[in-house]
Length: 240
Figure 1: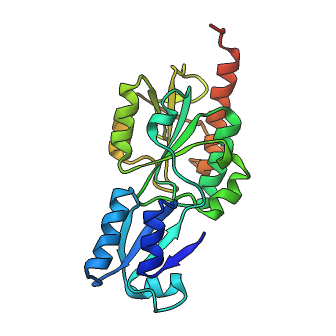
Figure 2: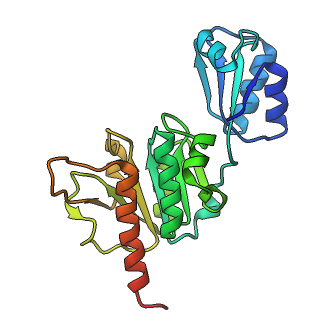
């Protein structure tokens, strides 16, 4: 993933609307030129994080970064409107491991999903690691980044989507529930599952019954299990 360091390179990238995953600003840094960059980033919906200067030194490989470092995105994000006509969307509630994110994107595309939705904070973005793990699927599956997953779910409901959250505490088995269309499948982060407010926005909570002593699967494996069950049901459904 390309790293841009310094006021001029970062400002020019923002003005040219190059895809950026996030902007890091050194804590305590200031001045009108830096504030202009922060304003440009916020207008472009690029997340801004304030980090210790030593963190920026490590990323940039130098201390001469003028208090600002930008992390480039491997691909441009899509808008929610562009995936609103999909039969299936995958909503990711805080997937932090880029390998998991890439694997889910690859599986979602293979199962026939029309897009993935990720939050801008406390989650992996579209990096080179994600692109490699997705094995080409990023070329075909749009990824939407939103500021708030709960608001995105509310928006999807207004557009007619039924929201199914995958949760080990769910009351229904994933292979017994009837999936209404259009469908949005919500997956929680590694080790944390769905956030409580996200759970409350789901119409149904489904689970994968486990035969062994382990209570849950890796999130990318779980995504494959449920998505391909949805794909099987979709293939069996009468046309028209």
